[in-house]
Image: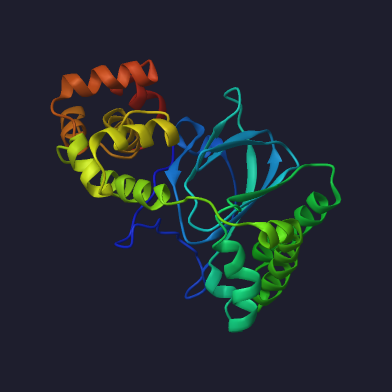
Length: 297
């Protein structure tokens, strides 16, 4: 399970890999992440995904969509999302994240074709299913971008941006009628949920109460619980402990810290409570998990 680094503006920190150029290109598989999942997160970047093999289920805000082999997906900027495997099977994917600023050369163009889509509350994501002409074309363009990265010839990012503009044309043509007739929808809950999750991500190793979480969102405890159940499918404190457990997995895998140190470092009140929750969640003890997945020397 991947968990995000959050900056002071409450966005995920994306490691682009190119100095000063906010573009991220990666091929990978769900099995690279502990328990083959990616924790709920968001970022300013627009994300394109091509499912190379297998299937995965995405939760984007309150909507669920299954992306199958050959499908393509665009996740709009600032959308809450996470994914998990379908039937515990691994999946391989190509992911390209691009920060909107890369399209911002001309203000009129940026306003008409980029910001209009980014700011439309009705466009949380776009899904192209395998077998359609658009999916085939976008697949080809994303693979072209990945090939450019693999070869890394001088100036290849210029060509990559050309392919991204062609992909964005497909996005625009797909959603132009939504832009024309959309009257907007209530998205006021999303910033509130981001604030509460950011608080958890930044303070998980401290004592956290539902009052702390709801205060971070500027809402009462009842509304806080309702929002977590609707969007995350867990009560707030259960989500806190789930997040702590995921982080403890990383420490078990990559460090030689004692179980006691890990328990306290991750915010659990005592090692026995940590071990109890770990066994319930993963059906093994922390020590058994370390033996199975640990890489630290």
